[in-house]
Image (cartoon, rainbow, N blue to C red; front, top):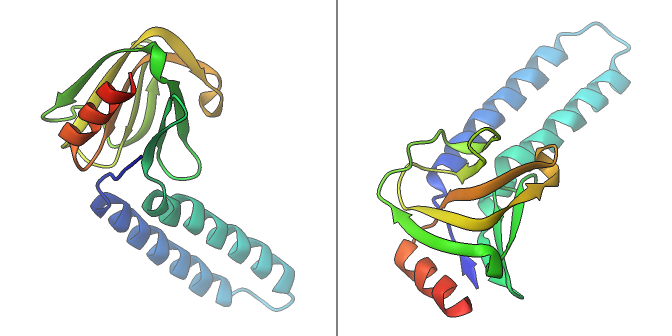
Amino acid sequence: MDFEHDRKPALINLAVWTVAAIWIIVLMAFLPSQRELFLMAVGGTTVLALVVVGVSPLLTPHRIEDGVLIVRQGWHSKAVIPLPLITKVQQMERIEAKEGVLLDAFNRTLVMTDSKSNGIRIQLKEAIRFPWAFWKKADVVIFDVSDPQRFIAEVGKAL
């Protein structure tokens, strides 16, 4: 079962990354001759960054499948949470953390949000490690979904 999250901040992020990529390519056009290989390397890296950071958050919903909750923030950040480890799921009226992906190792809190509203806070029985975050542990996961009541109902059914 897929759960969408707010796409508006991801669209703004995509627009900013697109403008930055265009400026890089325009500035590179003014380089002296014999620059083809450098131009291809920097242009390819810029396009890859644009796709991974700008486009991928638009294509990755959160998901419940096969006894796990998968929280995604693009192709680069994925939290796989076994459903039996969830002790508490609650809706948050406002997310007080910064938008984006943040793992606060001192408070053991993972935040993966696109917006400040429609937040979900999940408390875990024990902390789990996230390989993409340098193997840091978290026992609280905060993220946003478009329909928090539906998400809470589906997690309740899956538990």
